Length: 618
Ligand SMILES: Cc1ncc(COP(=O)(O)OP(=O)(O)O)c(N)n1
Ligand SMILES: Cc1nc(C(=O)O)sc1CCOP(=O)(O)O
Image (cartoon, rainbow, N blue to C red):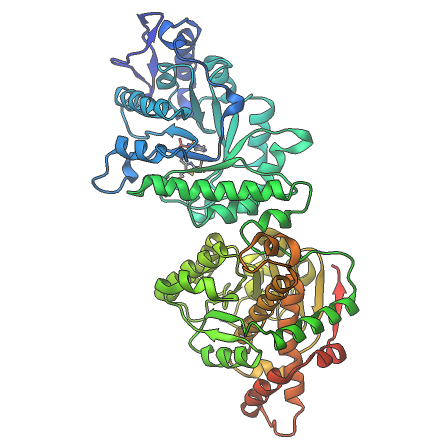
C-alpha cells in the first residue's frame, strides 16, 4: 500500500520534496505497479538533486567493505530490558561487526528514519558501513555513504541502482542461481545476500523446508565466481556460532568462497552482543585463514580449518589399503599413549554392548551425554560418536554441545542417524545435528542415508531397520552424500561402502549373525570412531615436535581418515566372521561374547588375510 509521506525530513538541495513512499516497506504488490513507477519518479528527483548536507561526508570506498560479519538489526529480537542503541554500540565497540543493515519491518517511515540517523551516528563512531533494508526513501534521506539492501519482491534492482546512483552501496537477496546471475550481470549490485541457508525464527515464513541449505548456497556462490567473476556475497538465514563454521566451508567448493555471514539473532538476541560478535568474527577469520592456507589446494584444506579433512587421496590400490589398515591397527593396539577415549552418546539399548566392544577394540568408552561436561570432555577424547537411537531432549542437548566442542578441538565426530528416515522427528533431529556440527563420518544403512540424501523414495524406511537395501546406485549415493556433507560416509549393509567423496571402498566382510543381535550397528559406529581416533594419533606421533592433537599440522592433511574408518570397519566385520565359525558359537546368544573376544584379538595378519575389499565406481 502506497501512502504519502507525512513529515519525512527528506532534504534535497534544502527543499522539502513531497514523495510517495510506502510507510512500512518497499514490498510492492503487483497491483500497485503504476503507483510504483510514479513513486520511483518522485524519488528519482531527490536522487538527481544535489544535496549539500549529503556531500559533507566522504563517500564510501566500496572496494574496502569487509563483509565478514554483517549485522542485520532486529529490535524485536533484543533480550528483555536491552536497549537497541546500547546493544548496537556494544556489538560494534570491539571492531568485530564489519557491516550494519538497519532492518525495520513494521515501523512508520519517520520513526525508521529517526532510528536510522541515530544508528548511523553509532556506525560512524566505529567506522562501520551502514545500509538500509528495503526503504529507498529512508536511504535517500541519509548521506551517500549509506547503502540499500533490497529483496526480490522490492523495487527492481536496476531501478534502485538508477535512483541511487553509482556511489551508494546496493545489495540484493538471492535464493537461486538465476537470481544471482541477474544480480551480477544486469543489476550491477555491489554484493548479494545468499539465503535462507536454514530455517529461522527471525523472519516470518522461513522454515527448514524453504531453506536452500549448504548445497543451494554452494551453487549460487559458484555462479558468483564463475569465469573469473567475483561479486561479494554473504550467507544469511540461521547462521550463528554453531552453524557458521560448518556452513562457510560447506558452501565453499573449488575455492569459491563466500565473503562473510549476515546474522540477526546470533548477535541481537544476546545481552553480550560484543562477545557474540567476537565469536562470529573469530569463526570467519579462522575460515578465511583456512582458505588462505589451502589456496590452490583441495577443499579438504578449507574444511580442515574446523574439522578433520577427508583423507589425502593419491592413487592407492586395494593392497595399499590393506597394508595401511594393518599398520594402523598395529599402531593402535600398541599405542604407548594409552587407549583413545571414545565419547559415545548412544541408545540405551546398545550402550553396554558398545562400551564392551570399544574396550575390546583397544579404546576407552565414555558413555556420557551430559551437556555440562561435554566441553571439558572434548579436550580429552579421541573421537565422539553420536547415535540417535533412543534420543531424548537431554541427550540431544548433550550431542549439540559435544559436537560443537569436538569441532572446536578438531576431534573426529561420527554420526549414526539410527532410524533417520523413519519419522519427521528423526529427520529433523538428524538435520539439526548436521547443521550444528561438522560430522567427520556419517554412518547409516540404506534407508537412513537415502533419507539424508533426499532419496527416500529409493528405499522405504521401516522403523529403525534398513529397507530392502535396494539402492539403485549405492556408490553414487555415498559419494554424492560425502561431497555434500563434507564428511566420510559409511553405508552399512550386506556389503559396506565407505567413501571420502573421491575413493569408494566396498567391503564384503561381516557375518549374518551381526544382524541377529541388537546393537551391532551401533557398536560399529564406535569401532569406526576408534579407528578415526587411531588415525589422528598416528599422524600426531609422526609429526615431529607437535604435541597437541588440535594443531594445524594434524588439521592440514596428515591424517588419513579413510584408512582410520576402514580399520574400524574391517576389525569389526572380520571379528564377526572369526566369531561365527567358532565351535562354541551356536547362535546369536553365544555369538555376542565370541564377537567381543575376537574383536579383542583381531590382528594385522587377520586384516591382510581376510579383508575382502575393492575400490569401486558407479
Ligand atoms: C544481507 C541480507 N541478505 C538478505 C536479506 C533479506 O532481504 P529481503 O529479501 O529484502 O527480505 P527482508 O529483509 O526485507 O525481510 C537481508 N535483509 N540482508
Ligand atoms: C532477514 C533475513 N533474510 C533472510 C533471507 O534468506 O532472505 S533470512 C533473514 C533472517 C536472518 O536472521 P537470523 O540470523 O536470526 O537467522
